[in-house]
Image 1 (cartoon, rainbow, N blue to C red):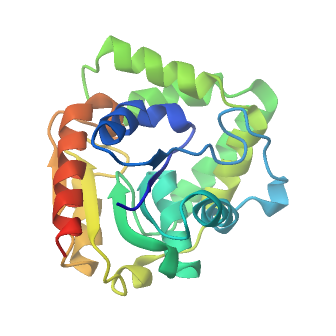
Image 2 (cartoon, rainbow, N blue to C red):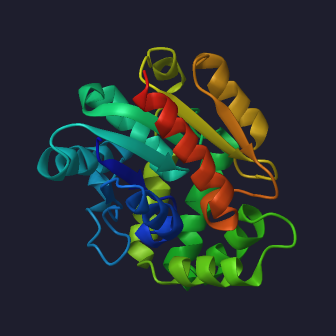
Length: 247
């Protein structure tokens, strides 16, 4: 079995994958959950060197160093942007791809402006306001208090500079829609049925470019589907891996 690498989202770290990592390791998989630069206590890259491509370079080096040169890679939200950058630069290292609650399009002008304004706010007042705003958007209505508390704690532990750098990098990321049609490897798309950040329509648009990719919609989940509904997400991943192994 190939190792599995799970790339976290923003502004989170490897802890968001706790349930998936435990589940997959219990099934015999080697699972790596790296912290991207600037997250999970890792030092950030210089702001002018932070990009989805730079993050993808870090994942590529991890695959070479610890996964024997090839891996199954999953990316959540910003991690999905990183995975797409990796597939463009080093497709030979990815034997199967899992896109969770993410998109291929670049930021719209409005979204880009929002990110740049958030950078100004974080620079002046810290990330607390951004975190509370995000929690109101990334969880399904009536979220579990435990999940809400866990997500808040993970977000609040990230360095302001890491958050700022990633926001800027996401605002500058390229559109990867053309990449999707080139994918011939086993591919999975997961969407939260109540995801207001990357709604099911976005997942359907991704699938329209990757017809062979199953799209699993997770009921009662917002953007943080892996944390909100871990059993359903784990089940979807396990079935995908079973089918991918038979190809």
